[in-house]
Image (tube, rainbow, N blue to C red):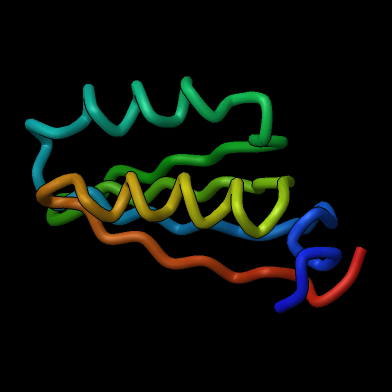
Length: 86
């Protein structure tokens, strides 16, 4: 991907699975840190896992930074779906 493409804003869905309820504070702190990029949020509490879905708008670098940090939290899985163009 060229430098020009990395500066473009992208819209995506970020799915976060939280298996370990002890890491919720870290998850919430990171979501707050990136709140300027988050357009919407929904959460679903299931007995075995909590699912958080974010609508995220930022550059691919912004999205990669957020998901990279989120994925490093123990007990958390993260997946991203980006819209091809906006």
